[in-house]
Every structure is written in C-alpha cells, then in structure tokens.
Length: 235
Image (cartoon, rainbow, N blue to C red; front, top):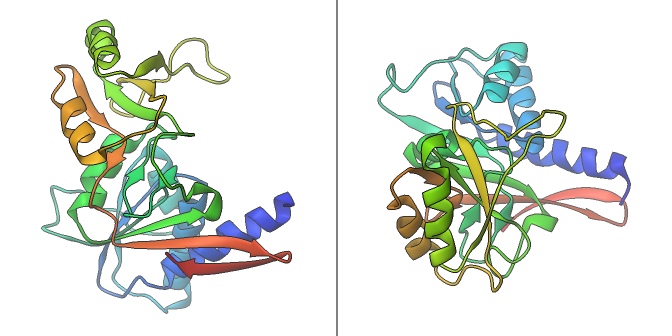
C-alpha cells in the first residue's frame, strides 16, 4: 500500500468522524495521526460555518497545538459538565470493541476524556483490528518515576515482560505530558481478560493508568484501501 493511499485513508476516516460532530457540542480531541485529520476537518467545518459553538477538550499537548492551529476554541474539564463526543485513535481494537491505546504516551489523559464522553468514536485503519489484544502491540503503563522498579517487578509477577520506553531523538526515557514514565508490557499469549487486567494493573501502587480501554468505545470507524481506493466502514 502506498504512503499516499495510507494518508488519503487516514484523511477519510478523520473526515468521517469530524462529520459526526454537531453544533453546540463539547468535543474531546484525541491524539495521533488519524485523529489529527479529524481535528483539521472540525476546524474547516467551523471556518465554513457548517459548525457553530464548538469547544474542544484536548487529550495531549499535540491535540492542543493542532486545535489552536485549526481555530477550535478550547476549554477544560473544570469549565464543562459534559463531553458530548470524543474522537480518538487506537493501537489495537478487538471484536468486542476493547482497545489498547498509548502508543503516543497520552493514554492517561485520553482515558479521562474518552470515558467521560457521551459518545466515543474510535478512528483506525484496518491494520489495527485484531482478534485478541496484546499479541502484536505492547501494553503501555504510565508510572510515577520513583515507582518504576517495584512496578516492573509486580508486572513480571503477573506474567508480563516490562520494558521502559526510551525516547527517539532524545537521550533517556519518554516522559509523558504529566511528567511520568511509560513501561511497555509484552504478554506472550496476548491478554486473556482485558477488564480484569486493566483493574489489576491500576491497583499496583505507582501506576497512574494503563492503555487498556474496556467498554469505552461506542463507534469504531475503520479506514481501508481496496483496489487503491480508500473507504471507511463502521466496525
């Protein structure tokens, strides 16, 4: 698949999600390359006057920068009593609509916003659809720095293989927007029970949040390229 086809497909999925946003709503703005197009198209709809009175709640510094670039007014969870719709990507989606997120190390903020939303729309390409979570994508766990070693030991006790995520083009580990570290965990046989594992990991002292999103996704929009043509379907 050519890079152009992939870009076009991501744009189409982002546009399909942006088209579902209605005037007068509070919108959770997710993180990642596909969601970036959704933010762009929401901004374009505002500029054209197709949308009015939108406020965005960003899940990351990246989302905040993009929203400002495309003219989407921002608000915060202190200012609003609801989020009508959230749009965000995922690293893996299983047949039950359970997700792994956190490839961009923003999953803590994403989980807060996405789970508060009345409707959570997930935008992915077909390569993100899996039969079982955790077989190909590592599970991100956000950890307070002082607890890194004991948390890694506890994860090993659960049968996981933890690795501290290191920066690219940066010496040292990845640091999240909250100032914490990310441990990526491999489970050799995948994740048998996402709901149970999500709770177990979050109960380890020092763990802030993990990348399992259980029972939060409402709509999965999937981009595909067939015969060189991008298309979007709902999974």
